[in-house]
Length: 268
Image (cartoon, rainbow, N blue to C red; front, side):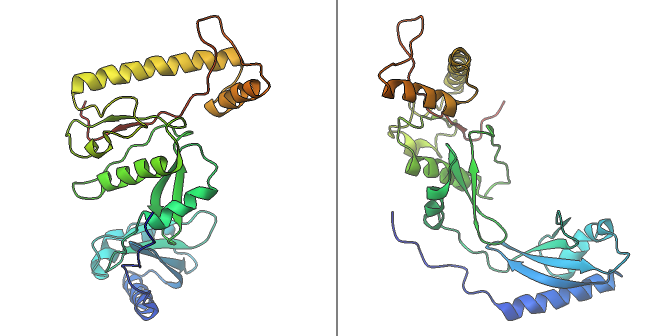
């Protein structure tokens, strides 16, 4: 991997953050919402201002002012929500300059992740890496407007799996009717088959996947386990003892891999 690139967003301007916090207090006061900004948490894309409302101020009243807050703060949008477990209300405003988050600086955080199919999603409001395990989800829908970064996010997820897992640990099916976004993965050894671009073949690929899924369920049931991790542990342990598990067919049990399916803008 290449070295971590320098930060693109520049250093945090604490003076500007404090000025925005005071301006936000003034805006809220104009709408008869008394309170103090007690903490500012700058992130790569948005900054959260923690408002401690005065006694008697309802959270719902502040939440309803989201559009007015954005307008008076000269922001494109504002997100207002309570913070679970705390008495403060979080007000998120977009930064004037968005920080570019490089995949390289997040990849290293995968080394400490126990998940079988850990995905790099980006950074949270505090600038910390956000990692999710696809295995227990097991479905992930990525939605957004044109140009919002859906394909970039999907590529980061794919690359985070390719970086960490060998082909015998993770096999994929990729469906890309647009024939643009996933063609770069055409020759990787992690694919069950070439990238599917024909909708009819995509349906057949999904039906084959269902058959494989049901076969795995039968195998796990016969061994009395409930997850792929437990299944693989049991099969590997038996092989290590020189007593591979068998079944009443032509072949015995073999460890199975995670099998993510990626669909790029598939309709119906």
